[in-house]
Length: 85
Image 1 (cartoon, rainbow, N blue to C red):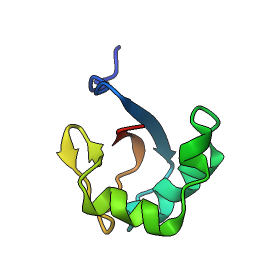
Image 2: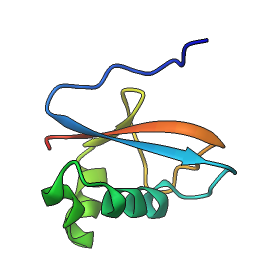
Image 3: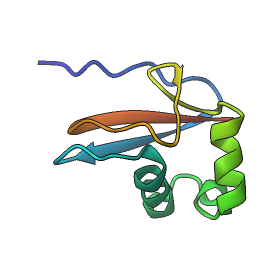
């Protein structure tokens, strides 16, 4: 059985979030995942102001759609792409 993994956009960093239960806000969960990853050290050291700007500029996407900070996340695996990194 294969997962439906969306294609990764060019010049982006993919963060894979795996949750055992649904969560209310994407922004808090994603920031923790960014701080824990080791693939892109510049992204790991991002300031909170720059992080908010990524959402504002539409550079954080899920399945090709612009993500919002207050978006909820379902239980399971979510692929988040951060464009421009």
